Length: 453
Image 1 (tube, helix red, strand yellow):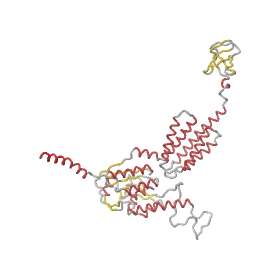
Image 2 (cartoon, helix red, strand yellow):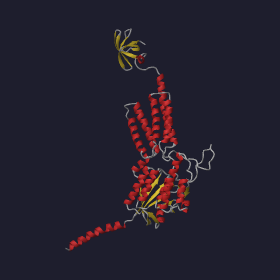
Image 3 (cartoon, rainbow, N blue to C red):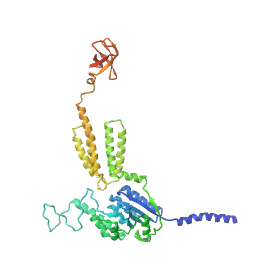
Image 4 (tube, rainbow, N blue to C red):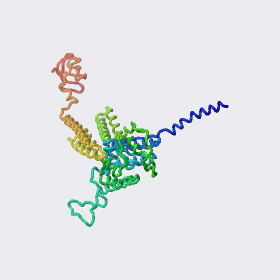
């Protein structure tokens, strides 16, 4: 009986230390890197990382940012995940020289605690028009300016254009959104609205002085030290941070995140679509080669998937494809460059329209280069076709006249000759000897008329 009690005590002793160790295990601070433009792939990575931080029971999640901004929809996905996370999110603009511009400013305001490294800046949060650069919207209450050729009227303001109304609508919505985020965490709401309406920016020290951020830190370790003991708001309730001595754990983007980030690059999507169209066009002009057609189809499918990750103007996409189609048509139905010039114009204009957001648009230099290469490529095809039209006929009887060959077998005035690797029945006015050189002077059905050269 005693040995049973001893065995039970030994088993309990083995089981107790792991439980105690689990209770005393140090909590961590998860660091999530948000670098570059904010797109669908970036939002997916940040949202998944915040979920992973919750699963790891992390004490805090540090969102280290260096971004010029990005898509409004992706930004709002990130902010929704931050506000819904039970893990306090500390937004940190770093390293030195980094920025939290445009959409990054909204994310910074949404964080439970906002911090910046020395030498960083934030702001310029004005939403960019879907149709390209525009003037800043007038402050609320400012009457619209009358046209230059009409005198100003003092009794009533001039009517705003639909474009001005759209920009004002988007700006007012963004201003209310960022003001709500600022109020949620007790930060400078007036400056936040000014960043939206007037596109102002602040350096790290001015942001601290104006209570736009909560603190300045040199690195993540310094951030955790300075954040320790501060009270933040999480889900509407005050939470005191205990960040001193936390283990820093990096959540790196996986291969899927990197691949999606690559496919959400407008320049990559643009080049994939261009290569796909050229590959399919080459396969159509040279049936049976297969490789260009397969390559082009793959590029088109991948490029089409990338289009789903960005806001696309389908009218611009259709115009660009029409331009490419016209240039391809020139190779089959040459009309002396009319299709090439018209197609190049449609292709260039459509390329500028494809991606609706100015921040998610291929560089103008890339569009110009792609258009020039397309014009040169199809221009070369056009020149070759024109040269081919000037050449004499090279098939049928005309192609055989004047060709030289060799007598293979001969009897009397008839025999067989070898011309251009082909054996023909032949007839001559004089007897020939096998191996003797002959020249074709005509054809009678399937019999060549030859003579001694």
